[in-house]
Image 1 (cartoon, rainbow, N blue to C red):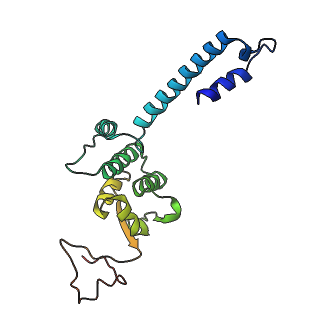
Image 2: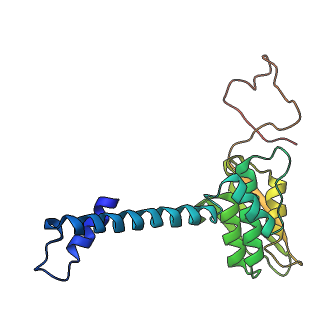
Image 3: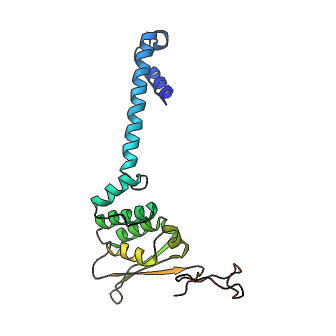
Length: 194
């Protein structure tokens, strides 16, 4: 990077009669300036990443979470906490429109709009319906209930959030392990049964 900065300084030379490359003192000064610029750029990039939820270290993420009222739970993974902090910020800036709710949902699910079907509420049914592949829930490290709770802060108090997950099933439950002769361990069937 320092070499690129030096070349940029050489190229920006306003006085064509003076060749920086020919003067050792100027080269030393330019190299010092290039190193200072490089160091400053790195420091700025490091600071920027510490204040970006997606890139923050655990310590910085804790600070960002505390600023919005979110504390890390005991034994919570950093990615689950990162998702909750992201959701809290999305909730805080939400103007409770369907667009801001959709943005919050995409942030929490860490996906794009092609993966989620969002149905606005009606007068008859004040529920916002989200439909997406069940695999997105598995990828977020959050449960369906946690996702709904996080999204509740992005909508008007008179509305609710309903998730309709589609795709394959999977078995769920404390300690569920299918027996060898049950036919469920063949890898051809999965379901979410509660």
